[in-house]
Length: 293
Image (cartoon, rainbow, N blue to C red; front, side, top):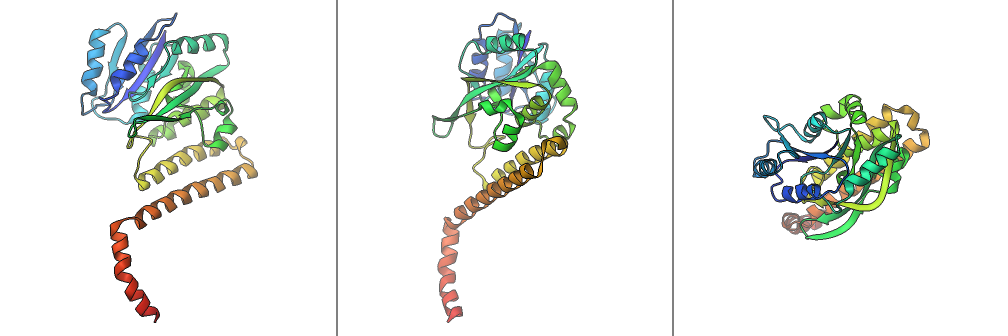
C-alpha cells in the first residue's frame, strides 16, 4: 500500500482541493489518505470528517487532543501510515497530475537504492491570484548542492520509504525537539543516507500565503525564518563533520552574512518609508541645522 499524508491546520479554504487532487490518482497499487488535522479552530476538521464519511475505506482523519505543531503532526501521520511508500501533500497545496502515485511507485520498485523522490512544484501567490516561479531542482539529488545552493526539495512533491523515514525520525531528535523537523531536514538526511531521485516535471502546486509556517510579510519574522533555516543547516553540518572543509565553511558564513544583511536593509527601508519616520525627520531637521551652526 501507498500512504498519502496531508498535514493541515486552519486551512478550510484549501483542504478540499488538496484531497480531491489525491482522490483523482490512478494507480495500480492501493493507497490511503491520512489527514492530520492539528486541532484546527476553523472548519478544517469538519471538511476532513466529511471526506472520511464519504470515503471511509480510503480516508482516515488523525487528530491530537490539542495543537502540537507541524513537526509532531507529520511524525504522528508517518507512524499511523500503513504504506511502505509514503507521499506528502499539505492541506494548502495540491497535485496537478493523476499519475503522481504511479510515478512514485514505479521509481521505488525499480530503484532499491532510492530513498526519497521529489519533483517541481509551481508556486501560486495567493494574494495576487497568479502563478510565479517554481520550487524544486535537480541539484536535490546531491547533498552538497543543497547545502551550497540554499535549495532543496519542493514539499508537495516528496515521497519516501517509510522504514527509512522512521530511522530518520529517530536520528533527528534535536530538530524535533525544536520543531525544526521539516522538508529540509528530511532532504539532507535522505541524501546522506540513501539516494534522492528528481523528476523533472511540474507535479504539484505550492501555495504561497502571506502569513504561513514558511512565509511572512513581517521583517522580524522573516529574519527568524532565515535564522531557523541556517540553524537546521549548521546543525546537520556540525553533526556530519566529514562534509565540511575550510572553503565550504567560509562560503556558508559569507552567504549567511549576505542574507541577514539584506533582511536588515529591507527592514530599514520599510521604516524610513513610514509617516512617523518622515514626521520625525521634519521635526528634527531644523534642530540638527541649529546644532551644526
